[in-house]
Length: 228
Image 1 (cartoon, rainbow, N blue to C red):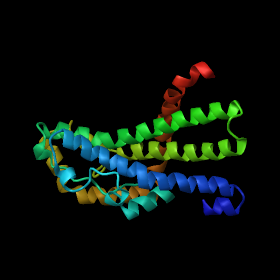
Image 2: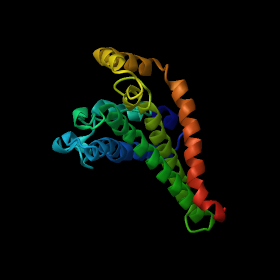
Image 3: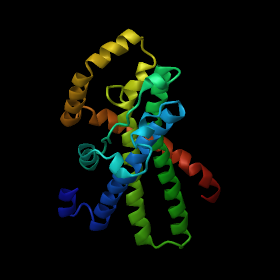
Image 4: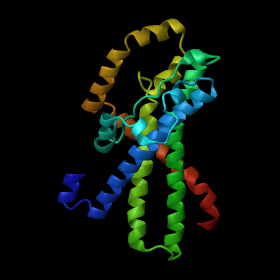
């Protein structure tokens, strides 16, 4: 971003909107992501997150510094995992899958809200209620906000431990295979980091994120079709 700003490819206002989007993602959306995990687990009978103080919108309870930095430089990252004890679930594998799914779903909902807001400001702009310069800045902000939320959802649905997608996958696998995967989870963690740093996941994640984002934007536009 700094290189683009210095080369004139990115205006100061656009750079500011990008930073603002990242700040809101880190201090609001990522806590919502983790809160969603804990809330679903709580509703399914597990009080671990509640007893750990993780059923909170306080960002300090959820932020992981390294994951927050990854959001800024890579576009996807993580917060501190919410503690969950599957023994409290009636069906541990299904309970873990639902708890894991709640996080990415919260990101998709945030992206959808961002899409709705974009359509609102577009209507304000074409009717002369909003200044063109303000509209341009808000479009940049919402573009980053939506794309980062979608990237977070897609990234977390990768079926590699410790990401949410692995917990969803485990619900479909026999217990003996799940136990073996858990035994090698530290290795999977290292493999995941290597794949991210090496850029191996960038292409597939970008493609999937673009596809999902188009769907989100299409759905968020539907309520406004009568005004188009």
